[in-house]
Length: 353
Image (cartoon, rainbow, N blue to C red):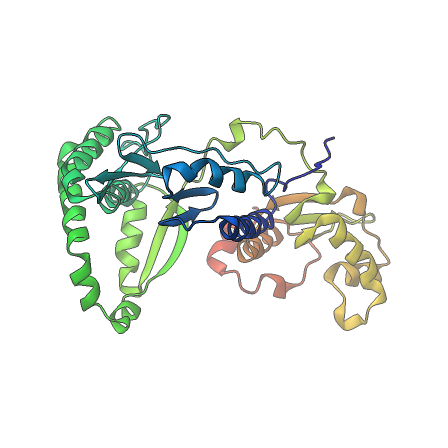
């Protein structure tokens, strides 16, 4: 067990917001304490780039590091009239600022392999993403160098040269003409071309066929991996007890017969079980199928044997899993309206013989 004595916890949704507030406060406080004004000052999260007189660098660093003992900055000075900021190399060429695309020393050059079982559009998207970064982050004189680098790197990831030549050139031309295109597209046209997106497991051939079929309905399918390597690696965290799991489809067996209740909850399972126990004290119009079975047949349910059938954080996906589980368990006490939104097409497939 470890107690956090300072700082913010990793993984908490509040941590990024509070970090931004602290750095904004630090920025205002420190800049107001300086007896000079930087030529420019830009910040992205905790990365700062600025221009100050060479004899003021130590003073500025001292002011920023004096804000709080545990918030310490390290300086990186320009070298040979060049300095990097995030993915951009900023070059001072005789008072003319140029930029180039730069990579960290740890850059692996590994991207989505062309032979991986993913939609072809994902692989084209990888090409477009790299071209977009390489061109928009660099001055015109570095474009050819960066496009050649993309060709070389993706070639080592098994991308065919003909595919690279076609899509690199197409994306490059579209970026150069993007200003003209944006001026000719109004809001009405953009709204007319709007699509609805939904994700399905990717199966080569079937996925592309479905997209062609549903294009007239303005529905675009997004492929997702049905199986990944997550199950092969330990997260390093202790597993949660079943009662503390949330976003689950669960089953509670009856003590006196072979019937069971199927339900779903976004809260922790032990909280939902407590609600089931209290439900008998509510008005009968609010009774669940579990409570109704208990009253009608004088039965009790074995809450200690409640089990988790599926885990799904998304609400509508969890409702679908709940309906499928009710159909798959013909001895459930659930009412028929619990599955009224499930198509009969799937009922015969799910229901056991």
